[in-house]
Image (tube, rainbow, N blue to C red; front, side, top):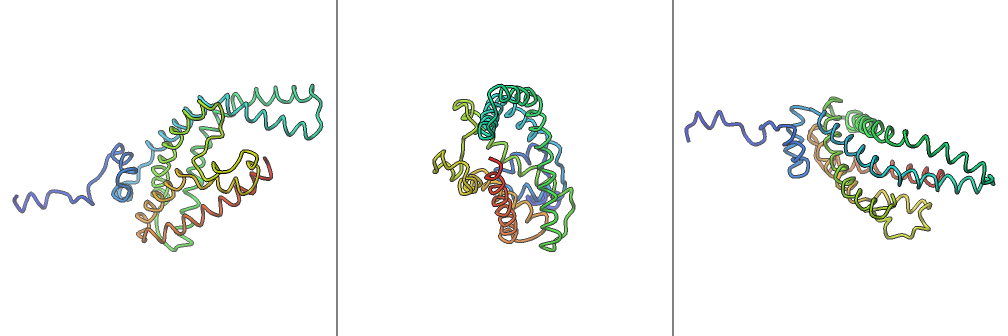
Amino acid sequence: MSTETMVERPTAAGEEMGALQKIIGVFTSPTKTFQSIDRNPSWVLPIIIYMVVNLVFVFLAKDIIIQEELTRQEDKMLEQGMDSEQMDQRLAIIEKSMQYTVPIFGVVFSGLFILIVAGVFMFVGNVVLGGTSTFKKVFAVTAYSFLIGCVGALVMLPLVLAKQSMQVSFSLAALMSDEARKTFLYQLLSKVDIFWIWWLAVYSIGLAVIYKMKTPKMATAVGAVYLIYAVIASALAGLFS
């Protein structure tokens, strides 16, 4: 091989990846993929995929989601001492509105959630850890890392449909009884989910790449933020369940 050929050939670390290569690379070679994203922070395709998967999930599981919410609302109304006529009227209104709000919320919230997560971790990276990166890069890393959630949704969907219940879990909460569902411990353990752990690992790698930091340092920060979220979300779930 000539010297000229060796010079012209790009190194593996500097090879640019297409959008499809990046999508596959998030699962097969995250470090190399996020290095490419660092150089060219695109995010449109993963956002589209994430929102489409969420829309499909919500559309197919909509009746199950609505029925479980109606059951929850009915239990609350019984606790409040409402009579059957009032309950039927209220439940009919809720069911009608949820036919529209569930799919809309599923699509809008999926995009908004990525935006919020990116904003939180840009603050963590730039302010708390003292790094330097742009929002575009953080948003791109967040968008691609959330493809892990798409896999989780696609694995969960057939189980939800077969069971006719949203109570499908890949977390430590699966070891507890259904009677404990409203407890703080149950809600907290439900956050220790195999797909969330996978996402935390991949996201830590991505943020470490764009912030030029050691992965363990970034993983500690990402894990701490997730722990704070898990505790707050579990406490609120117990209050409003």
